Amino acid sequence: MPTTTRSKATDRLAELDAAVEAAQTREHKVKTDQAHARRDASATAADLAGYHEAVGAGEEPDAKLEARIATAARTAAERAADPAWQARARGAERARAEVESERDEFMRANFADLAGEEAVLDGPARDRLQAAYEELTAAEEQYAARVRAWHRYVRHGLVEAGPGNPLRGTDDEVRTRFARGIESPTPRLLLREEVES
Image (tube, rainbow, N blue to C red):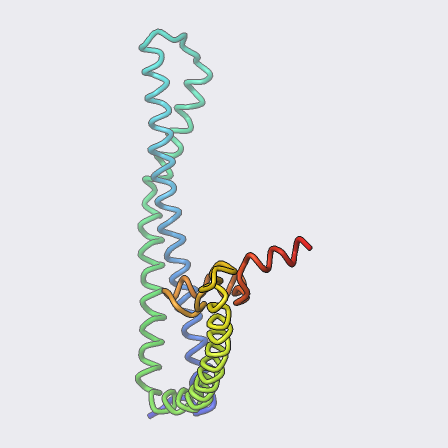
């Protein structure tokens, strides 16, 4: 039996998705902080070893410096070895697993409502994409016609070739062109002359 009304199912799912994301972020932070603590311990231990190596190589001992480095190394080692890290990691993992389980169970129990709400959004998305594709196709043809018009001058050696079809290439190449602003079909030489005149 669905546990929520049809109008609220996707809203509740969005809340659970946000809770899962927050739990994943907390878990990641605990593990990242633990990794940083281990790196700090390793770095300060290396500092202390470097100090003793330098003294062994003949440098003048510095009791205050040695004490400062040794204290930092001991503090970092104690922090990295703190058993609380493991407990925090287990707690964060458990919390994330619990909220993921709650979300997954909600999806199974309310699938009919969720599917109905999701499907309502599909028609407008399809219609928008279809209209956009038709407009894009018409715009591409208009642009291509302008490129072809300039090619007659290119063939006669009057201008250099301008840009090609901005929709051709990899997805990343096309996105980059549109992000920068696509070029005019006008050959670059003529555009430079317009700017200079």
